[in-house]
Image (cartoon, rainbow, N blue to C red; front, side, top):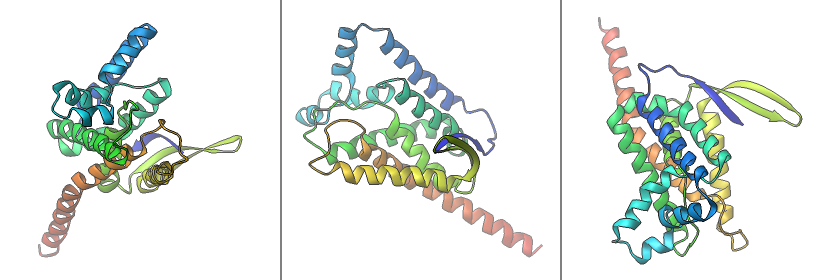
Length: 233
């Protein structure tokens, strides 16, 4: 399933979401402009490597890679899929949290996502890069805050393509289930090294759920209070 648009209006334009998208695309454009040796140097220096970080956890450079790697991507498909999800779901979370809190939330989700993948494989020498962990946090928050919002989704069925407006809880829930299954499978010693950082997705998603829960509870209390007040008028 590929989401292409949600039916969930916002109260204003999502400037922070747009700036994050532009930042990611700009960094990737810079990557694409480099020669192969220069690109290899960039990746070697600025991506996050779990074993390297744990070997020198007080290094400012290693902490810098924790954030720099969030804006780097490994290819057009990697970038495109991440930016699609950010554009569809990020605007509503920005609208609900506010611009400043949304930036803090996005970075927090990315950091915890990276930590989750590091804990899953502390000896890994594989460079980590991409916004997937932070965007997984956005998806987790969206699932909690807007579970019934309709998401226009492309559903490939063999040689046919169907379009359907599905509830966010189904679209995002299916996405998370896929990450969870793949994450568990990656624990196997037979799993290949490298590839997708499944536990980063899981960690980022869990962060989004945890951050959004207080807002969801607050919204629910306000609605109940409003209904109660209306009853006694």
